[in-house]
Length: 376
Image (cartoon, rainbow, N blue to C red; front, side):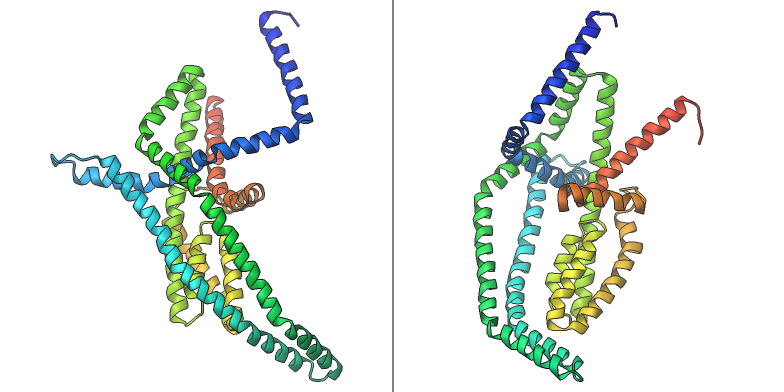
């Protein structure tokens, strides 16, 4: 190898990379602690960026609507400020509405569950004794087991309630301590929404000034594709979740199922998780209903499957459409990998992220085939 300036720079770069990688392996705990602290420092701004991205969807629609309606009029007012304010009001109205609907219902349902547990235990005992009619020894063992557990039932209920109360207090204290973070994130999101055009232009200038034009064009194209895919996915999933929750609430209420409101809200929330969200809601809903009526729990599972098939074949394709553009196999793989890496958040963002990667690889492959004049 000729020791010219370019080769010397490559050798120095390889040596520096090796030394840095060796140091990293020997200081993993310190590096991990630094990354954790750094992430905590940036978390309000990361959260603000996520909130800004979500609010940008209704804000853009409101802004376009106002501009269209007031285009030919001579009255001028701050369209962006009005659009941000309305988007924030919609955002907070949804949260407040869910809280006021869900919390009282949740408290009442917990009370009903606790009051129904003794009857459920008695029903299970009677069912077990009936099965063991021909086996008196087994019946005695069943009665002894239920009597022994029944004497400690009140203690068990008190212990469970203490855990629930302590967990609720811890949740409230954590919520209060995080109010400053949420407030900072919302303020940052408002600034981002108000200056989104300037942020885009500034980012483009930096990329073109300090990078190659070809690379900057690729990054901008990826960002455009990501914004388009995630926006369509989020708006479509939210509309689909609301429709599905309303359908379940109407059906469960008409058929007289218990916990109709809580189960419907739960279905709406878990519907944001592709594929596996429905199964989570079905299991929790069936358990809640089974405490009151095991027969109704079985009927709920059947009704759930029927509505789920209607939703998968008619509602989801119409509402969400082909915004994701992945086959069922790649959809399943994206959701599983996303859930393994980042939990529920990964299951939600894994699908549109995989769609972006798929589109980039597809476009790049087609370009290379065109350059080589190959048709497959």
